Length: 261
Image (cartoon, rainbow, N blue to C red; front, side, top):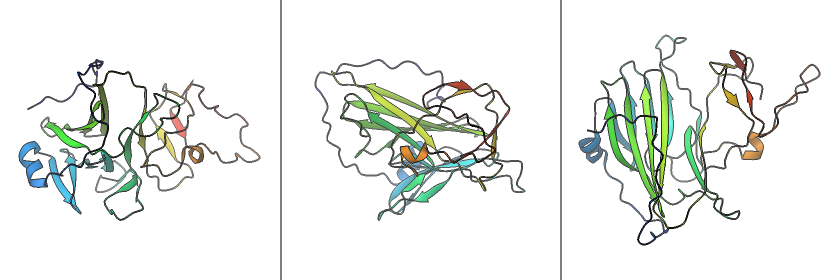
C-alpha cells in the first residue's frame, strides 16, 4: 500500500524519450465499480457509477465527504463538517449540469485546468480528449483519505492527487514530460463555492495571504468566461474608488475578507 503523498513535492525531472509518443487521443474502456473496489477499495473509499461513468466517494470518520468524477478528474461535491448546522454537514461546492446528452457532466465544482502555452497559437487544454484513470488509493485510519488519478496526454504523464481530511480538502498535480522538446504550461485548480446569499458574505482565515486580481483560465468546468469573471459591480455613491489592478500583488491585512463582487 502506498503511503499518503507528502505535499512537499519533489521537483519532477524532464525525461528524454527515445521516440515521441503519439498525441492522438485514444478511447479507453472504463473499469466497473466492482473492479475498482477490488483493486483500490479502502475503508472510507467507495467506487460507484452513473450512466456507466465511474465516480469515487471519500468519507472520513467525522462524516466529511467528497465525490470525484473519475474520467475528467472533476470534484462535483464536497460536504465538510460545519458547526452551524444541526446535522453538521453542508455542501459548499456550486455545480450545475453541463449542457449535452451526458447527465453525469457538471460545470462548477473543483476542476483542474492545464493548457498548452508553448506557442502563442497553442492555448488549448492538453487534457482535451483524454480520460483519467485511478492509479492508487490510500487511507490513514479514515482520518485522511487519498486517491491518485493518472492521465497520459501526448508526451505528458500527469498525476492528480485528491486528499480529504476532517476539515479540509487538498489537491496536488505532478506533470512529467517524456518528449524531446520542452513544453510551457499554464495551470489552475478552479473552485466554485456555494453561498446562500451575496449580501454580507465573508471568508475568515486569509489574513497574511498574498493575492492578485487575475482572470481565470478558460475551462470546460467554467460558469463564467474569463472576461465575465473579471467584471466588477459598481461600488455606488459611497463606495471606495480604489480597486485592485489585475496582476498587482497585495497582502490581505484584515482577519475577515468581505466578498464584494
